[in-house]
Image 1 (cartoon, helix red, strand yellow):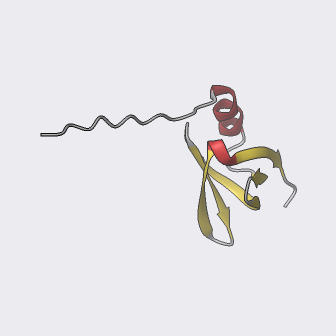
Image 2 (cartoon, helix red, strand yellow):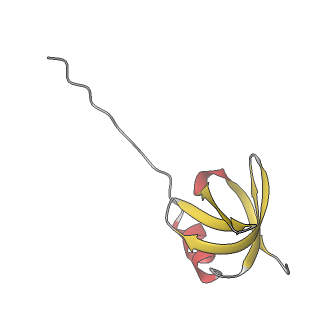
Length: 73
């Protein structure tokens, strides 16, 4: 019988996690490799964040974030 070893790894930046956790609930602009999203930062997890855009949750992997800034809107 063939046994396959599967290895998974995840990139976690504790400073990004801590900083984003401190602004949970505020409006943000998130630039990713695919474009930008604007809306309230709903959830921060070690490997992803959730930004609500027009009532829809967008789950963004931390690895894909280029920059984040608080937004007035």
